[in-house]
Image 1: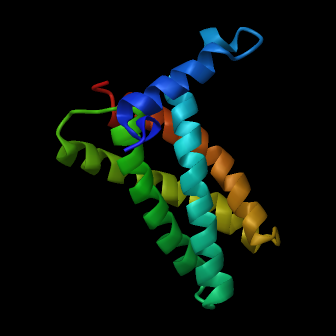
Image 2 (image 1 turned 45 degrees about the vertical axis):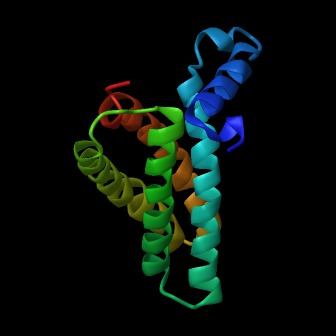
Length: 152
């Protein structure tokens, strides 16, 4: 396995990048924030691709398409963040339960609330999902760092 795909290699790459951030950001941006951004940027693209395939490609209702794409992307996010970014060794069961609670709150508030609400108001559904995703990113990083993976 290439070194960048191991937990140590991923963390080392995130540390290397954060050390080089300009304007004093290297002192305030933790490697886990950058790692979260990389992983969740990738899983967000997975979410959008699945959303588009389900809704525009297969004609599924928007609420179902959002739900299925979201569930798949956040399952992937949990696995990647746990293994590569936060490198947690705590028992997976309690973390998974906590994560599910965090994700359900996130889903109801940001994804369905903001995402579907904006779409219902006439905002194109991809743009609505992007806006909801920005709100979601702040919430999810804080929850993952200080609640779900607090053992790190």
